[in-house]
Length: 349
Image (cartoon, rainbow, N blue to C red; front, side, top):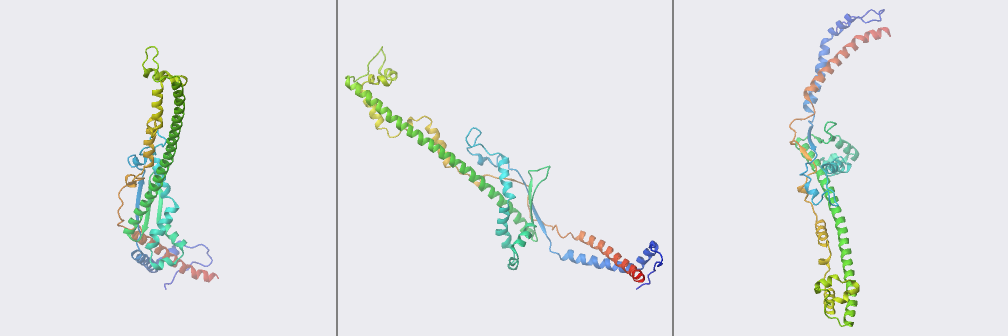
């Protein structure tokens, strides 16, 4: 150990020159400590398990992407069309949902762990998983831009996981939206079916009432022996039949009345005689059979290409070496100062 200069015991102030000279005499010790710490940092940097990160950026879908969601939905219909924001909000809600994260943890993350890794606490495993999955919005400049990032020691695994997570969110959003669309269509179809049933019942009752009215007129015509329509003021029988009301139906003659009653009684369906019925039936058939192919729609638009990462984000070897050398020098100086002040401290004690 080199002989270190001691400051005068009576002087509480430290002579800077003496301090620098003391550190200089211990320069090799400082260098040795710095080299040792730097080598330790290098060992860690080159032996630590690399960590890779795969990231996907997402934007709202285009109007064409959601076109099939709006099949049969117009501004003038009972089912208003979806906007791009409506569909993208459903996707975002599923993307950030805890249920999707839990499902991914159970179906993807846990099966990837070795058998010994499954013996730990489930809560700790979930915390570890949560530290490797990041979901965030793009910020104030582009609030509709989201991204999902997954970290893993395997670059292929990181890329596959991030693609799987976003795909699961997309599938969940599509399933939810299609379910809502089909459900709305079914409710509307049921309402239309009730309207059709009501119109048919109303037409049946009107036909029965008309048969009764014509039957009474037929009795009157037979009673007065009127078989043919009465010709008035040069009108034809057809014109006369249009001009008579319920009180003078008998004037159409028993032959015409009996033929009309027979036609009404033998009528198999009132559908052709119900106004707007066919329009309702077409709408009902469309809504009842409405289906959407999930492959024909999209709930988000990917921004850029997602490839497996080829360089790790951790450890940053150069930064670790720089920090190791810096802290090594600081530690060496701290040890040198401790060796310098220790004799002074003992002398005063």
